[in-house]
Length: 209
Image (cartoon, rainbow, N blue to C red):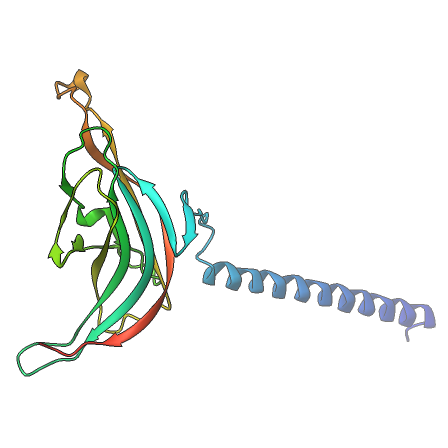
């Protein structure tokens, strides 16, 4: 028959075991919770922020040989017809000015200098170039005031980002590496991101032609 001391020792040991078991259960639960958070946050991969400034429209900035005055963005939906499927595009209104003090040549804006950054993380969408005076890829003359223009981006039919992000790239006036046997004469190239501009979007349905 167990003595009173043995019974007391057994009770104390049982309480200690339960107390430590409770602590271990809490630790395991916290570890599992952390694992879930890490999983949904994209794992342990380091999240790197933007290396360029994010600006709010309306805003004017100079990138490379152009000055961009971005003003507004519109999602345009075009219903399907008997002959054409439904489509959608983003139309960005902006003022454009040629700031090329190096060559002073008349150049149209390249489509890859303005790129739409989808909120879902999908591939960037290049513009179709600048549409000024009703002409696509209008050639902007150096020395003249800024012109009101638009830039269009083809997007999926269900595109509905409430805030449109437009990446603005600027070219650099520099030469190729002459050490590699290339020309040492500078020219505009080597596009690099300068800023991301955020524009609140509106939605409009356009009658199919």
